[in-house]
Image (cartoon, rainbow, N blue to C red):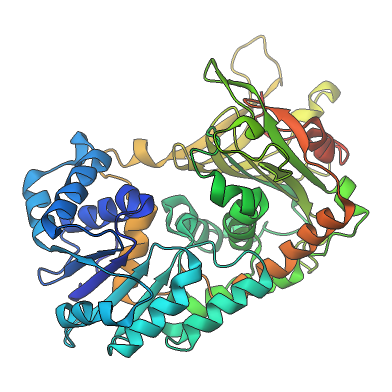
Length: 489
């Protein structure tokens, strides 16, 4: 992490007993404490609706912290220091009187960071009640996704927050933007003329972005069935990755310069026509199959499921960007649950050389690929063509990697979790890893036309077996253009 001057703050975590807080946020704060990146006067206030004694809830948080941090990274001295920062308040998020104790604990001297690990429906009420007890002037608010379920509902949420907190103190989280490899996209593109001079339609054939999950719903049926894979993954994570790949160079590294360029990309996305819904977009829903050698149920067989649901658990689509840099270069996006492996990667396919001099049967191999892995092991690999070794090989070609694996290259350094970086940037007042309101609206505008098209057509999602790479039509989507998904087996 970069060197910063850490200022003290009061970190107020709303929804402190929820899954996100326990699994990600408390461990991230603990790691920042262990790295000496929390000021000694920084305090953490856990706020939740659950009644009970403070001692009881703090003991539960401590146990969950040890569980999710794990023995490898657990330092009891750091745990003790971290827990000493922590207090618990029982708060009804809709009652202003319950915020008085928070205001008393926060005081007026320190910067306050209010993190909303709650449903977006209560963001406006929390902001209003913070303002009523005098906690709006010196407070930054952090909003978790999803922010709305379409353009209209997202505007309602953002407008409710904006009544009390201006844009420069509003931080909208997309945790993919905190990943080390995603951060490296900026450096990779704009610090290396090798790539930036080739980063356009003259040299790039097409781009793939895949975010695959092995898991199914994991008890989130109530939320997921109302959202679906398009709202849950495409509208935020995959479109943010597309923006970082496709955007023009920003004027500088300031938050608004970077976000200005991302908005231009979103506004340049070509709408997908009703006819294009059948050739450019594939919706899928997993049925029973196998994962890691074990039988797993289909989506409609999950606990508490609606057996008539037509919610998609898989989306593949072709997106086109209408500007000079990307004219004619398709972006293939794919994301789904119950896939063969957990995988998040971006593959940049470069065009073949215009003059080919090698054996005709090897021509299909001649393609450089830049592979950017976000998970499971973060790293960057450039596949280049070289000659096979050996006196009997002649000019036989092989494709091999020039590879940077972060965990192997920096063996002594722990790769921070995305939330650690994001929380640190909020404390530092840096917004360049966070999503601006007009980004949210531009992404929803593009996704809403897909949702409306699906609703009008009435077509059901295509079935695919759990443990597969999705419906067969998702393969046809890319092979129709004479291409194939990279690395599928």
